[in-house]
Amino acid sequence: MLKVTNAQIVYDNVIEAVRDVSFEVRGSQIVALLGSNGAGKSTVLKAISGVLYPEDGEVQSGAIEFDGRSLLGAAADKIVRSGIVQVPEGRQLFDELTVEENLLMGGYTQPVSVVKQNLEKVYDLFSRVAERRSNVAGYLSGGEQQMVAVGRALMSDPKLLMLDEPSLGLAPQIIEEIFQTIVNLRKERDVSILLVEQNARLALEVSDYAYIMENGRVVMDDEPAKLLENEDVKEFYLGFSDGGTRKNMRDVKHYKRRKRWLS
Ligand SMILES: Nc1ncnc2c1ncn2[C@@H]1O[C@H](COP(=O)(O)OP(=O)(O)OP(=O)(O)O)[C@@H](O)[C@H]1O
Ligand SMILES: [Mg+2]
Image (cartoon, rainbow, N blue to C red; front, side, top):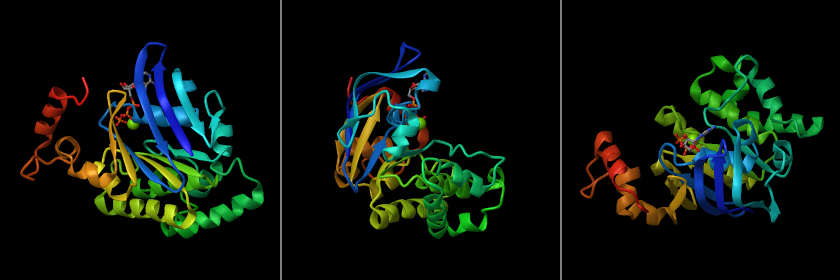
């Protein structure tokens, strides 16, 4: 369904944020894209969604295809119409608008009758969002805002939902709830999911396949069960040393600076 091949993405004509990235999301799959700060994960998602232009970013070489058609150069709204939608990092709701108004924004590519149906579907999925429909979005909790952001994306009936760090800044219980929703979406509505996460453990628990990015490159890809057993993954992304004792963040960061998988 989605195929990214040897993508190279540059900002301001000089900053090479993504050097060489290839990956694939097949129908009904949950695919995780993992990696630490600055690896280029968000840049890849923005390239797929066609929203690099305002940031002066550009795909310089490589291919991005959805159902066999190239997305390169396509306008963002056309990409949404083709069935791909992104939930951006940090939710990016319209804070002064109500929850319902935010959701309606997500339905802009759909006819009015479909918008109404989809709104009800979102309220069925997230009862908490339904309760808050008349509240101003800016005053919701982080977890509720994330649910609204996911709901807004679902308003366009996507075939592929791309989530950029949905767990960011949320309490463990809320994260569980959001990940459960992701799993249910795939199961019940057959939506494919591309999940960008720094929370590697959770992402590996729910995904069918995962890619790890470092410095603008995919350095490893495998089935989650295999990655969970990998010593490097354990050490750098799951925070465990060989003996299974939790390393402190400073140690892990120190290692990350010292060691690169591909150099
Ligand atoms: N608008 C921009 N202009 C210039 N450079 C940028 C821009 N956005 C991102 N970059 C650079 O591109 C690289 C990749 O950034 P990106 O945001 O894609 O990483 P990320 O993997 O999403 O990181 P994080 O986990 O922190 O969100 C970084 O070096 C970043 O500084
Ligand atoms: Mg990011």
